[in-house]
Image (tube, rainbow, N blue to C red; front, side):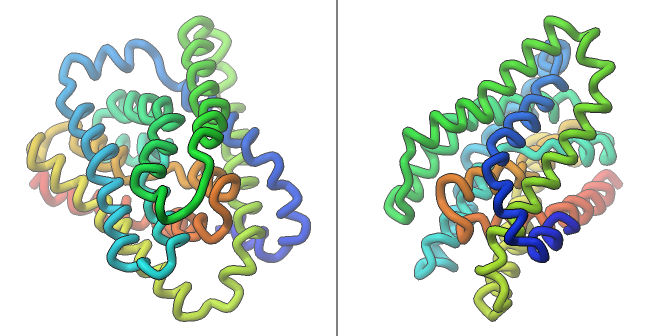
Length: 294
């Protein structure tokens, strides 16, 4: 919230920092790669059910929810429909691992999902956006694929290589990586606040309606993921929180950068609103999972 407020108040200055957004995203995703070891993947292979269930939810159910949100509620505002869909196909949030740990879930599974989904996002996002939204908003899918390959795929590969080839060099740097990551996320949020200010200054019914619909979108994301995970894994399975949070929590910083660079500030609004409420729904579903455990 502090970043958004700063962007709103100092929009003329903060908007000039938009040129650094791709580099900020590059660093954030690079840090994700440095978090993952080969052992993380080996622990997932022993019981891959949660991994494949999560991939099904992430690549099929979440995009379907995003498409239906646009179809039913934004037929007259294609930019908002595209924003909902972009939110659905944005990579997994790093904070999903934090909530998985709080809920007593399978952290290695969460880490593997964050890494794998981020790695394939360079192809998945342009493909799904073109397939579902190609007739709604115009964009250069090939250019988007190339850009995401440079800002998401490449840094993940570099991070993975560095962590597994030189772990002794990476581990001592983790606290500094985390600090710079937080600063980069603050920069992204601040710039976004500056860029979207003209579109939310009026705070009219259209903006309020969009905010409420993004809340509904988040609710559907979290609780549909919970329903699918509970159905296929059982209510007490250790992988349940991992599947729920990895499927539902989106890397809104990445979504904002993609929206601002390829679709425009209006498309970024659903992602911004989701960023403001994602933690609330994460806490709500945490309480529900605790009750399911009995």
